[in-house]
Length: 232
Image (cartoon, rainbow, N blue to C red; front, top):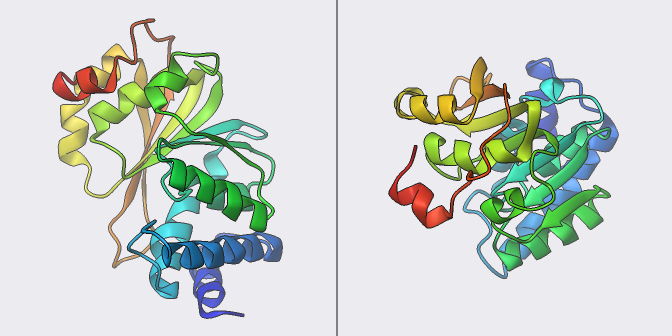
């Protein structure tokens, strides 16, 4: 077992996450591809085995048990494929989609997923463009990590969700952002149902879980420049 796999396996075992050998192997292969690709261009600053195991892979799978069975799960602003690739490794039943506007990162997700035998569909486009098209309100769950302030993120993600769908916002300290997002949550029909804390004392990360309680007005999401200039 590599240092990465040992560390990830220990994190999962100590925190009560049952992860199969197959899932661990897939995540190791994905990690190996990430490290090699990172030598060519900057995907992430976090590549050391122990740090990556905690801050990329274990962090990603914390809400895995809450994903709907056989659900369509979309990752907005996927970057190097987090959290969607680790979630797919652990939850083989979900249909996984990544939304990322950087072609280099999209190409990486495609190649790393192939090497890790993970079926991830990649949309190389902005989230607001995807949400205005056919995939609008078609997903059972949406995940997003380190992309934008919560009130901006809500407008990008909510229109992708079915009524009743779940939105998982990965955040560090979240209290101020949550307070600022109060209007956005009302306008976009998002209800906070759970707050998850990363079960690791040295890494204060949280996941806010929202349920969509109604359809979104056709005008949402607006163009990104408008969202950022005048957030809800």
